[in-house]
Length: 167
Image 1 (cartoon, rainbow, N blue to C red):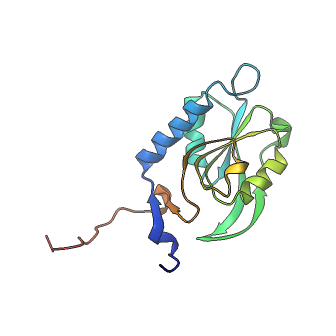
Image 2: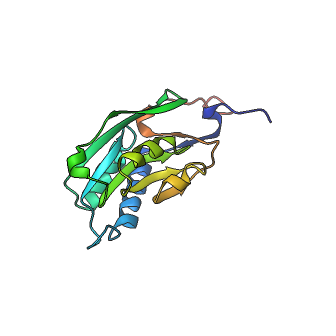
């Protein structure tokens, strides 16, 4: 078989599925923070980490939420990751007690940049691909490296013609 386009081996994630998986991530993280098991703050990697970070923060009753903006994709083409907005590093410190949340780790290049800013933070993603797994401390679902994940914010509902027949 020839190489597939990104949409030909796709994993479609609905809002309901993302919510369930982000809650499962929160349950997995519960009680695993330093000292008393709690977490000081959540940092979402924008943009994909924002929805799961909100859900994790709610589930774990974490009130301090910030973002780090890393641009590493232009549509479906990955490029060199660049930090375009950092959290308040006076609050973050070295990352102890900080949860960094993203939707997906692909190659791990984005998380490598983020970890350099906060080396002691705990990195958690909802989905993980094999190349990026070493950069993640906690994740929920692994998908193959050649799978393209379609997140709900990238899709719209529309009519689909049946494979066979017209009614």
